[in-house]
Amino acid sequence: LQVQYSCYGFYLSKHTYTIQISHARNIMPRFATTALTTLLLSINISAASAETSSSRLQVQIPKSLFRTEGYDHREALFGVPSYGGSIAQNVYYADDKLCDSNVDVHKGYPIRPMDENGTMESWRSPYILMVDRGDCTFVQKVRNAQRTGAAAVIVADNTCLCSAEADPEIGCHSDPGTMCESKAPIMADDGSGADITIPSFLMFKQDADKIKAELLANHVVQLEMAWATPAPDDRVEYDLWTVPTDPISKGFLSTFKSAAKGLGQHALFTPHMYIYDGQLASCQGPNGENVCHTLCTNSGRYCATDPDSNLDEGISGADVVAEALRRVCVWRHFGDDGVGETWWKYIEAFIERCDTPDFFMNEDCHKDVYNYAGIDWKIIDQCMRDSGGLEGDVPNTFLDAELRAKIDTGVVVIPAAYINNSVMRGALSSPNVFKAICSGFLPGTEPDVCKTCTSCGDNDIMQCTIDKKCVGATSAEESSKKTVSKGQLFMSLLAVSGVFCGVGYWQWKRSQRQMRDQVRGILAEYMPLDENGKDADGTFSFATAMSDGTQIT
Image (cartoon, rainbow, N blue to C red):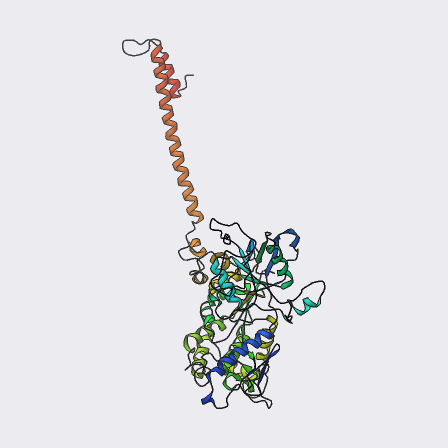
């Protein structure tokens, strides 16, 4: 694809993308904004390195395909994996690219028995479905597989990496007429993957071909997909990549302050602002001019997408870059403890008070937020200027640092949370992030807030980080208030002992009476009595005395 309207070119792989941006803002075509946004995203994906993966792919059956180190793969940037868990199920090869939502579950391999109508049995749940790459997005394939009831998806790559094709030991052979890929593909979200709830991996061609060969031969293949949050020590590091206008992360940023405070020094937080390299995107002209206008600052060096897709009104990309720099400065001055309670207060207040087109860049609103968070606005203003500012063809050290960190991390889709350098899948919600952080501690090193609150329901976890107890439960402090004192315990034991002694004495007296009555009854049967009812020789008196415990001598 090449649209040749001007000399401003965007280079992606082997294709050149160019687009004209009119210098007259009142005649800016709407498609230009959308196209530029898409190109900025594409450039970032092209430049990103493979992200750190904490997942594992292994063949359990057949044994001949088992590898001690597992299989190299790429984890999808969508779907919800089971952190700390695994899926080990039989695999079905769909023999299809699964681009059509009407999936035929009665085809594929290995072949199953036929029913009375001569139709092959459907895939037996639970199962992992292998599909071929190509013709549609990864999200579309996984969504269609999810609808069939698949527990997970393996996308079989149809193109060799150039490095694998050139290595005779790997033995990857591209299909005739197919060119190799210079970089490993990224299973990125196409923007519609929020409804995907099952995990998926991409398996490289040289390995996927071996799996397909077994399935096409009607042999059973069982794969295991496992996930784990690395837990290197008793302190978890977590990072958040977002932009000030991202609607998804606003909910998290507005509610996570209590959890960050509760985790304290046990967790090290680092926020990152996701901006674009305007020079790489050719937003800086040959004479240093900003050819992307309101999308960029510093003569086209640093850019952000326009949140409302309107370059003439509302919040601009340059406004987003400015607020991103402001947040970086707030963190650098008030987040060196790794908790950043002041930073959280600033973000919380900004979202509540200034997050509208009318107040987003309003200085009075900014100062009001500074005042609420306890920040001297002059410190932040000076920080923004000292880092290089936002005007002129001048590099900004803090924004350059964010660009480098973005490349090093390999983040592609935002918002994104990283726990111990591993990307967290699933919805970016405060309960999900909190539980992922707590799972990242070494066993036995979890802070009290994790031990107390991870067992709460998702709707109660954040309240638990404030109350230090689940809703309806009794906190440790309340329990301590209800603890019986030593004096009360002693008096209670004394009272109980008195009761037992009293009951014991009464029981002893009762047994004595019973014994006397039995002795009298026995003697009455054998001893003659006089006319007055007394024993003739005094024997009964002796027995009575004995039963009463009276000493005779």
